[in-house]
Amino acid sequence: MSETGSDQGRGPGTGSADAGVTTGALARRLGVSPTTLRSWDRRYGVGPAVRPGGRHRRWSPQDVAMLEEMCRLTSAGVAPAEAARAAKGWSDPPAPGAGTVAVRPESPERVAEVEPLGDPRQECKGLARAAVRLDAPSVEDQLTALVQRHGVVVGWEAVMVPALHAVGRKWESAGDRYVEVEHLLSWHISRVLHRAPAPAGPRNPEAATGPVVLACVPGEQHCLPLEALNAGLLEQGLPTRMFGPAVPPEALTSAVRRLGPSAVVLWSQTRSTADRPLARHIAATAWGIKGARSRPAVLLGGPGWAGRPEPGMLRPSGLREALTALTDLADG
Image (cartoon, rainbow, N blue to C red; front, side):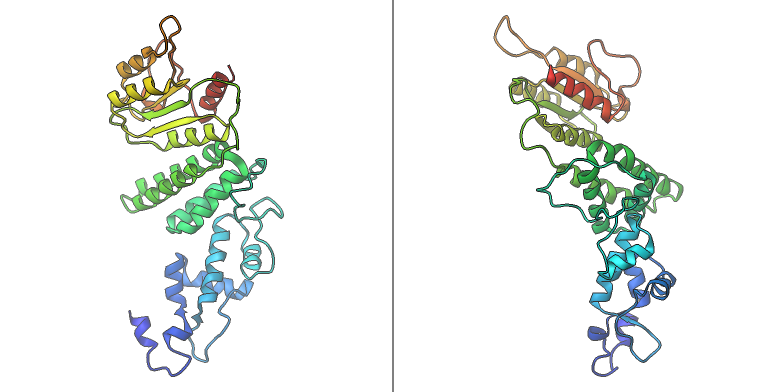
């Protein structure tokens, strides 16, 4: 408020509409310190294009866009000098540890072979920093590029889960100060997983197996790992039916009978939600003509199922093992 008011009465070309924002206001907007902006200006030449004769520098919309790009790239792990050159349009943005590969995500229509991940710690740090700044565009860009370049499994195991853990540790050690950061990061991970590219055709067009049903048990709201599994299955060309959190038992049983799935994945995050009688009921659910009845394979996903095993049911330890088991079932 005071910064806007101080711009009034400066004459043509020097008011807030023309002269832009102050360094302090821009720093707050970007989530960095004013000292960082001055240092970037001094070292890399990413200061305001027009400097008024007074003491206070003003940043135009073009300057702000350049600094937003600079922040996005440094959050992705790009060295500040390289990020500055890219932000000023001198070169294509380099990915961290990847030479000349562009940071910006490729078009969704072009799904290339996955690339090896360079330094997952750097990717994780960049993602967590962007989330702490509540920089949603940067979080979205980094996650989209991550999945498109490296695939769902690598992206989930090497970057997304560690970033969520890092953010979780941060807000646990600071009371409730960073709860919003974890919510923002989780929401964008979910959003990107929903858009994960899938092959044009099924994995095995001649197979007559039903889809994989994915559902959280009643009372379970923690759905993100199940979303990662759904995206990984689609990436492998396997059909799925995702029902999400807290599916009522009657609805799940009805869906299994109607769909005739090859497998049912039941997710439980805590022991209090692990409904073993429901899992046994789903495993015993049959369909088809008399004499040729079929039943689904049942996979128990999540730490809630820890403890005694359920006979005839699989309990994969993570995303990669679950995908292996389900693809093996599909390939028959």
